[in-house]
Length: 242
Image (cartoon, rainbow, N blue to C red; front, side, top):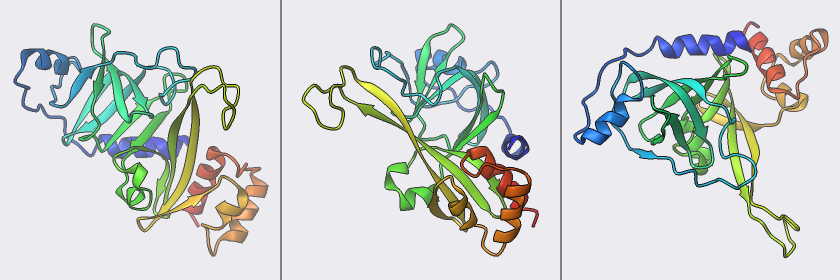
């Protein structure tokens, strides 16, 4: 899994040339944009983050730590030192050099690569038009690319669901607080056509047509858990070699 994601990281970061874009007109906006990095100014929709979800259990973010991130913006790669991805609102929260929290609109961002501050693993998030065609709610949203090779892509679509407090019974009966809960769905994309999959052996074998026996042997010999993201990534990496 490490080799696969690191390869994607190298591919993305060498595909663009960092350049300086026109500065915004307003001086206040100029200063906010300068804070994105020491070497680059970009234009875009930026606003202050007013912490609208304080008091709600859970988090709207993909992880709750600040992470170093490279993002593609108007055909440039911008480095930002402290970033969180707000899955619920589909925007990017970052800190400027003074620690102020600002929101960057994602309309002009096709992908970003976040380095997990705990594991130091690069996490590649991309907008995938092919998924948006089959799942309209994914339009302009990011998918976490777990594996990308000649056979196809395995992606995780993260979701955040806000459950409201409810004392009257029903779905969240007895819930005394609002709460964010995490969910995700997985797709395998081949020839730009996404197929929804589950992380299990049956689903995995259904996408390695013609190589089922080899894959079953590999799973058994290497003691691969087909019920995990890592198991799928390792197996698909092996499948690419057959």
